[in-house]
Image (cartoon, rainbow, N blue to C red; front, side, top):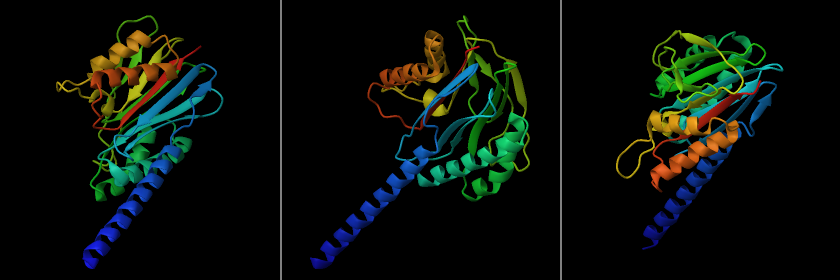
Length: 260
């Protein structure tokens, strides 16, 4: 009896320690995400990340580069838990340094792949990502993609979104991979939404997926909003669609709006 009680207490202590470690990891992970929306002359950004577990593998970030330019990354490491969260943290650190030395979105993704490939490979993980740079002075957006869902562009006054398509393999799959990039001229009122597939893969009890079309419909209906309330509208639509069913994957979304 005493041995059984000791084993039970040991298991309880181990569980408490594990929960404490997970809580610390969750707090650290949340601290790596932007605290607030970003507003520069000519453009505004907001983002949100809702992990499916205590810690997840999604990341988003947007950072001013001078007075009128922004560098942004959104990524999704395969899997959940502390392993995926650690790799996400490494990707974030790598992006923060790469954006300071590389001159294009495609070059940033190439640098990320070069530096992360071996660690992703050893951990048997991979990562999708898309990188964007925007110059509010010229209105030029440069976009590159590594196997990530295509960003959606809603032109001011239009009723359909345009997917931004750029070819590129997932990070961690091929050493020395190179990435295509597209350039787009943006105008006042245009909106760009970046997201992870956790958004479109939200499922209801009938087995239906929210899908890209569901996301497009919300963007079109609320494209007049500023980025933060637009994100709120998307997340509210997801909650209504799921009708209480928990999300199976991390849900991350970033909205950008050109203001002038």
